[in-house]
Amino acid sequence: MPPFRCGVPRGPGPLISGTGSPPVRKTRGFSSYPRPTVVPMTSSEPGLHTPDRVAASAAADVPALHLRGVVKRFGSFTAVDGLDLEVPQGIVLGLLGPNGAGKSTTMKMLTAQSMADEGEIRILGHEIPAESKWARARMGVVPQHDNLDEELTVEQNLRMFSFLYRVPRARRGEAIARAMRIAQLSDRGDTVVEDLSGGMRRRLLIVRALLHRPELVLMDEPTVGLDPQVRQDLWGVIDALRQEGATVLMSTHYIEEAERLSDEVALMAAGRIIERGTPTDLVAKYAGTTVEEYLPDGEGIDALEARIRGHGFTTRRTGTTVSVLRAEELPQSLRDRLTVPLRRASNLEDVFVTLTGESVE
Ligand SMILES: Nc1ncnc2c1ncn2[C@@H]1O[C@H](COP(=O)(O)OP(=O)(O)OP(=O)(O)O)[C@@H](O)[C@H]1O
Ligand SMILES: [Mg+2]
View 1 (spheres, rainbow, N blue to C red):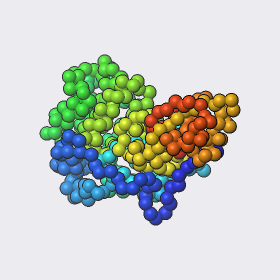
View 2 (spheres, protein in one colour):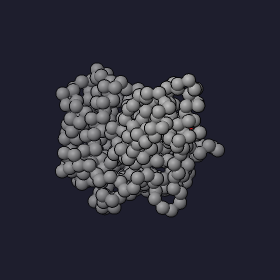
View 3 (cartoon, rainbow, N blue to C red):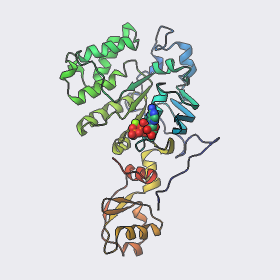
View 4 (cartoon, rainbow, N blue to C red):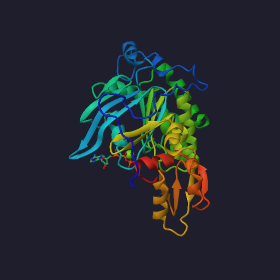
């Protein structure tokens, strides 16, 4: 049996399939920290928030991201296929999907590196691409590949970008100090980048995108290829961002990371969002509370899987075993005819594999 898929609403109606209203924004600890939009900026140049611009889009109910019917084609191939996605301000949204799902293509349209063929994109109320300069000024983009200036120190790298981001002179010192604090690099200001560890470099790369206090941060696989310790360092940075009220859109192949960091996750496949919700809700909806792994006993693995599925259960192959989702509901009569299972808590990876039919990398 092929993996089941959930439908995506088309046309009018809810923008996103999923579990209902967005979560209440978390305000852990730093709720009184000023929001980026209220930082007084002084020029009418893009990169600085003039009062009318702020008034147009600073309201908390303006979505950080609004994509409707977005299509991106490469020749005859459609990479993004009528994508609907709305992200409220102040959450971390993990974007999950198999290779080729269209995650990076979507990110590139948000940064106006690539133009949509159809559909509507608004970032913090700004139409894309018409107002992309304004949108870019209010967001930080963390590139997948490190492009720090290796010959400069931590502080010099940040200072250079504070110019590029047009942080007002009076605020530069504070912005750089804050960035170093978030990156836990306050005592490394004079260290040349090439002398930093990989994890320190990655943290610097991220906070560099935060100097102008962006309201929205886009990260395309920020932890790819990093060792577990470095990834965990990065998690601290993302958590700090959320505590300050920023919105984060982060694509990742590390499901555990998405489960741990995201207020909500959106699962993307074949250019569309196929499901979305809080990790807890998605796990409960698709995988219940418990997964049990059964070894075939006498019969082959195909027959074992068919038998369990015949009782209406969702299964997935895990190496030589069959994992049964929502195993807490297995009837005793069926359980009696199975081997003693390995039992574990259901997780987001079970949901991902079930919905996309892809195994995790
Ligand atoms: N410039 C391009 N020209 C042609 N096809 C492209 C181009 N960019 C992306 N694609 C195709 O669009 C599809 C989506 O690619 P995209 O990079 O967005 O996927 P992804 O979800 O980011 O995947 P991954 O997890 O591997 O990074 C793929 O089939 C890819 O080959
Ligand atoms: Mg990608």
